[in-house]
Length: 310
Figure 1: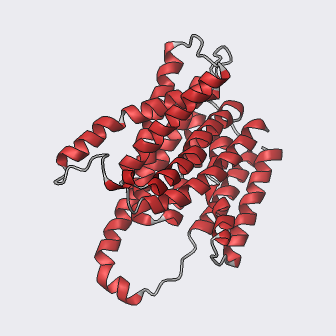
Figure 2 (figure 1 turned 180 degrees about the horizontal axis):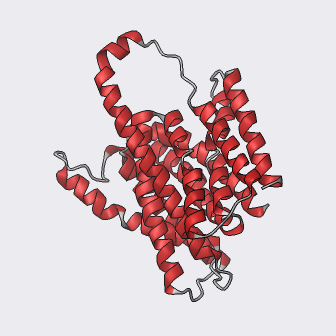
Figure 3 (figure 1 turned 135 degrees about the vertical axis):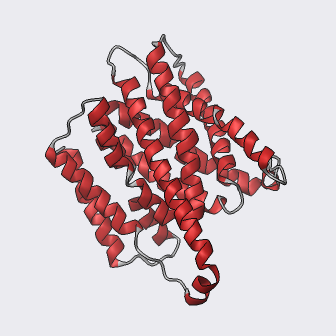
């Protein structure tokens, strides 16, 4: 139950952070957002480790490199693809694409870890994914005719780009989760979720530097991190809040979930973030339809199945 609870809390925090990142994406490129949140999170994790005196014991090379590889793929590549997909598709469709991650994770775990889930657990996974998909695929109201006529071609390009990026994000997230699970599943290895998160984040940030350099080198205006948003205390405060909730606490709880429960179940619960966007939308004054409420109830049933029967 500890792992499942950690996964649900992480999903809730990611919902809050996603709502913030979708707004920040209008001002800050996805690659830079990922780098910023990674660096700030590393600082927070280091401070936490020093405060708790939780120093790293000897860890075999294979789990160590698996955690680094998990971070490079899941955080470096996956999070950047996710943030880019959000700019192309919007939050709802991007979150829909992320529902592909649990089935991919479960299949990879079955192949590489031999984690055979019960049939009822598969039913819970499917039910949860259906509920999330039902919520995030609901169309929003738009005064659309003129907009569609003027930007149909651009929309189709963005759609293809967003779908590709969304699939890459889901696949990278699944691969990263499996690598992390392999590294943490050995009972003889005593590495805390806190250190696992720090190692994954460090690897994720390291792979972003050459990527950012190549992007800046190929860009006409040589975009760097010294752009005007750094001069806005309000934007910096919002970024810090999103990082604290979504990256620092979220990834820490993600590692707890992966360590203490089957990776297929953990990945499914971690992907329920769209469910928690519903109360956020209500709080922001948006109208929530009966379809969205039905999707929430369906996913909650799936979560209950995973909790008590899986």
